[in-house]
Length: 209
Image (tube, rainbow, N blue to C red; front, side, top):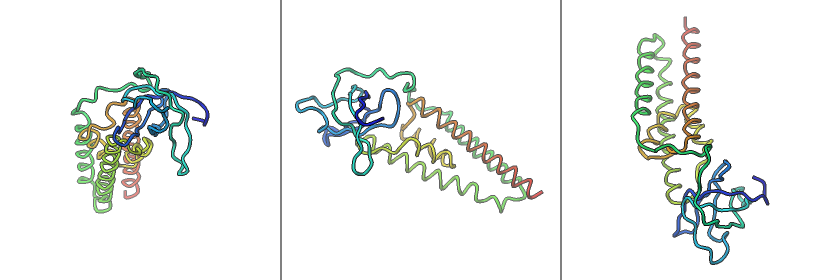
């Protein structure tokens, strides 16, 4: 989004006590920080789901924030690109993690190169814990109206091997489970990670043969 161009977005989080929150551009893109001082004096404070019209500027720290904000007074009707899922807890993600863990354990146990492959589950455990923490911090930020973790960062942590922890965080914390576009990108990253692990496994086994 270029400076001076007006866009519309729906308020996705708001801390009324501190007077700021985040707005999600309706046409897509990262959430934008908005402070109550950017609204005209006397304007009612925005509600979650309400549509704001605004311009985007950069702070001295390089962060994006909304300026010249106008409260439309209407509620958002998110387009298909921002459609949300039900958000209900599902057993499927847990099953995916358990099946992956079981298959990984089976492959390692029957492989004569087991001592050389101990780093695989150890890496998944460390990255999984890191992913859980990253999601927890972002959940806290969303609830408190603070700066959010970029979605690309959340996806990158999963792609690198932290996806089992990310799955648990999503389900336990009820975070990032309702946004369809994110879930699609997340599970694609899981498939890519598992495929990369399979390739590495074949190379290791082939090299030891």
